[in-house]
Image (cartoon, rainbow, N blue to C red):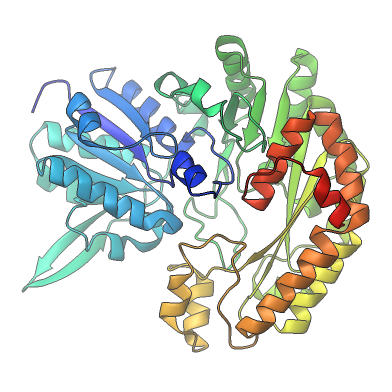
Length: 489
């Protein structure tokens, strides 16, 4: 192989433009932060002696011309369980182009179900958990032409053949201790302006940066893979602030989405970061699409967030029923959540609450209780009722199998969106799920008071056409006149 190896990192997600052509819209498209972190790590680790490129299948296509132009030695694929078919199809295309290209797959799909993925011989190696150090060690072994060393790399999954049988071996995951030592993501390797043409996580078109301020989560929710571990490793407020300053000054980015499991797991760090932004006088907008836990927050933190430029805060409820909270090990203090949600709704902040139905042993009446609770929160801008997915490798999947759920039915749901109803559980029929969805749509989603309050908040932040974009991502279809939905309410 050449002295300077070519490394192509590919995000394997549904293509936005193909979905538009099919009259369906990918909810949001944001920069591929996972592979951007890996790219910057490889560039630093190998002192720029590698040629690294990023291909994002949400906005680009993989074909022979792309592979011929870059001529990769190694392709790193990243995808979710919901896009496992795209991961496998991408690996197939690469091997058909050149079987000598080494394909390494990672991301949540491989971390959750490497046993399934590695049965596909188009994938040479998998990486379970964080990919930066593991992929660097794989590349080092390949450069030395000592492939046998790869089997000793932490976090690597590989095939082993025993008497004609194929077994997938997973080495213990390797986690990075000090996140402040990681280089900032490689924004120089993506088409930033291309993302600005598509609604992103702000749900409108913005030149957007994605910030990841921590890895890992101390909670033990049974539906979550918890790929990053239960020990939360946090970047310092100063390190996160420095990244914001760099992106603001060098790229002109003024919109920042924070993607953490729990951003405010350490209250003082979150407050320090907001205060740094306030003192800087940067006029930016911050979006917490996920990972802001209401019942460990405070009015002081919400006030600082608002002053710093936070315009979107989403909170995860999951269930309003104490028994289900205990079952799923979320253990949200609903009284505290209620207080913080209502307080935040009094600000000019886009506030969302997410809930789920279809947990193991959850009854129709319990799911209905959650919907009725959501109905009371009539100042929410965003409200979602998702239907539980029993992903391979989670405690909830194991519990579902133990309760006699059909494994094929559970896994058939993977490639459907979260709003798609679950076929059935042992306690709620598919017909009952449809009834629950109908009640949610009528009494919560199109609640007149909620829609009117949402309109006021959205008008504070967005132009009229942008509000149409906002609702296009909410309803997963092109909206050209959102006001007709106000009349439905």
